[in-house]
Amino acid sequence: MNFTRETGLKYRAFSYKIHTMTKISSRFDPDADAVLYSGDCLKFLSQVPDDFFQLIVTSPPYNIGKEYENRLVLSEYVEQQRQVIESCVRALKDTGSICWQVGNWVDKGAIIPLDILLYPIFSSLGLKLRNRIVWHFGHGLHASRRFSGRYEVILWFSKTDAYTFNLDGVRVPQKYPGKKFFKGPNRGQLSGNPLGKNPSDIWEIPNVKSNHVEKTVHPCQFPVELIERLVLALTAESDWLFDPFMGVGSTAIAALIHKRRVMGAEIKAEYLQVARERLIAAETGDLRVRPMDRPVYDPDSHSISMPPKIINLNGDYDHSPLFKGSIDKNKARQVS
Image (cartoon, rainbow, N blue to C red; front, side, top):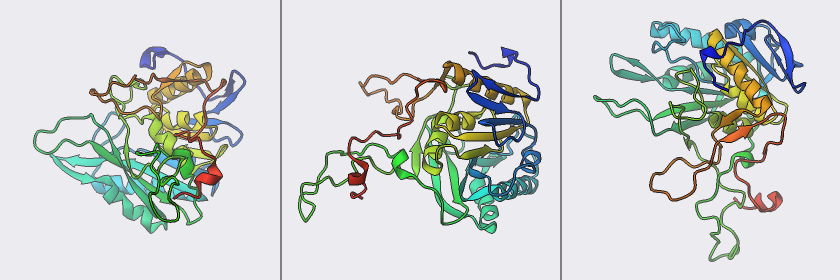
C-alpha cells in the first residue's frame, strides 16, 4: 500500500473494526483499541478523565515554519506548549510518563534548544526528569556556517516516583557477552547481565528520510522503533498511550504492535488519513517497518542486511524483548 495523498480513502466520523479485530474510533472511546481524532489536541483532552494515560509521547511542532504549523513569536509558542503539557499532565496516571521529543528552534541561523525552553514547564508541574535521551542519527541537512545537527532529545518525565520502568524489555546485547569475573567471590561467573545491557541514554536510530522503509508524506515523522523502545520500557500490555501531535500515526503503530491501546490527535486531515491507512495495512499484513534489532548500516560491514519487518496485527508477531537473552530471568536479575 502506497501511503500518499492519492490513496483516496474518504474520512468521516466513525467507529469500526478491521477484520473484526482492532476497533478504531474517531472520538474518545475507552472501549476502542485505537482513537484517531481529527482536530486540536486540547479539545480532545477536554474529554479525557484525569489519570487516564500510562504514557504520553510526542514530537510537537518546533515552530520553524513547517507545513503543519504556523510560526509564532517564541513566547507565544512556549505558552501554547504550556497549555498542552498542562492538559497532558492532568490526564496522566501517577505511574505514568511523558516523553517530549524535540530539537532546536532556529532563527536567522542561531539555535535555541527547545528542551531548555520547555523544561521549566514540566518542572513547575511537579514532574521529575528521569532521562534526557539523546537520539543520534546519521543523516540530515548539511550546515555551512555551523556543525551539522545530528541529534535531537527526548525528555522523559515521570509524574511520581512510583513510575513504571521495565528495563528487561529494552536491553541490548552486551559488548562482551561471555565476559566473566577473573577474581574474587564471583570468579568464573558472568560479569554482565546475560539478558543484555542497559541501552543507555544515547540512542542511535536512523531518522526517516526518503529511502527509509517507513517514509510517508510527513516531512518529520517518527521512526516506529524509537517509540517501540519507550512503549516496552514504560508501559504494560493493554495500557493507554496518547500522542497529542500524532502526525501519520507512528505512535499508534508502535502501541498496537505491542498490544497496547492508543489515542492520538492530529489537525491535518492528510496526515490522519495516512495514519488510518497505515493501521489498515498493519491489520492486513501489508505494513513494513524497520526492525528494532537491525543495526545501523555500516558500509564496511560484511554482515547480511536484515530485511524490513512485516507487521500483521491479526497474525503472529514477536512481542519478546528487544534483545532475546537465553538465560533464566531470575538468574539474570542477580547480575548487575
